[in-house]
Length: 68
Image (cartoon, rainbow, N blue to C red; front, side, top):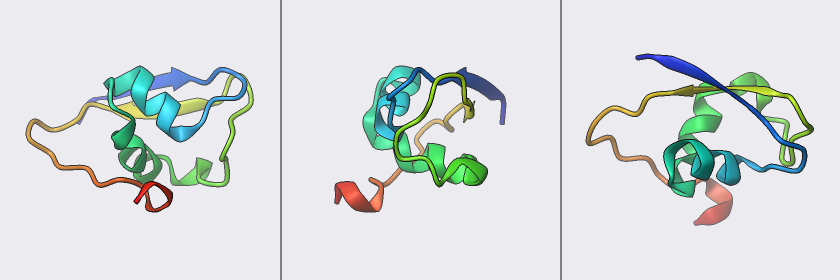
């Protein structure tokens, strides 16, 4: 799985990053799983590096718990 890096912008949240990277905010849970060291962030400061691996074709990602 290829892993790319995304640099956050002040004030972004997990779902906003997922929308920016994958064009789908429901992939926030996937991003959180891939970045356990960043899980304490709810709102990101500027310049945090987030791993954004490519999604597997046909993968089903569930909504994060707070979005259900």
